[in-house]
Length: 239
Image 1: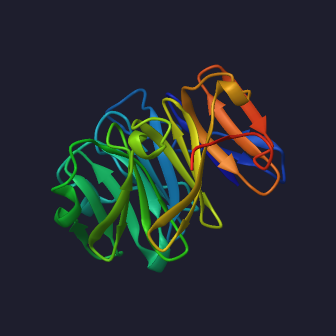
Image 2: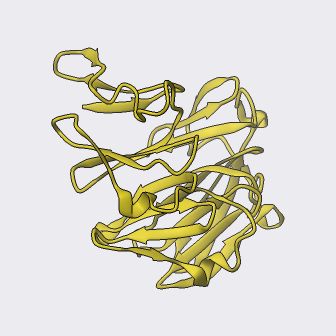
């Protein structure tokens, strides 16, 4: 199945039957007639959903029954993003910073949060378990083993410090920002071959919401529509 979220629901596309389903979680919160889905991931066979109204992380099992992860939701903070990482760890950010959940308890990562002055909008992970954190105004942060190991900002070649989505493919990191897409190779704390994709390369807009890449295509969702590029041929080299 393919799950997708909109401004007022989350629905499921059945690939075998080739049709849309609107199961019992059509509206996610019984107190709201509408809910804007911000992010979702699969964790322990559950679909974890974050909304835009406040910290409202819900899980939906195979029977379409809604169950509130109260241990994640206890402070009722707005949640910005969620990511199912390596070693069965669920990572999420809210107004209080970065948190992780191992299936039993929530850990607040104060060792990172003390450096944060902007919200974490996106989380991804490299093959060596380094978290790549996209912030709304502070650029990229790289976090591993309880330590902030490095960062990347507009000064270093990031298209914008306002990061909206981070995508990682074979340690090639792609960042959707308010100024275009930045891509680079990550290796043991270093960033190599930093390059940018902007309207100069064919983007419909530099205001980028999301990005996906493989060896053949770079798919970029912008405020003016979708752009598909060849990542090996079209870019502006920064370093």
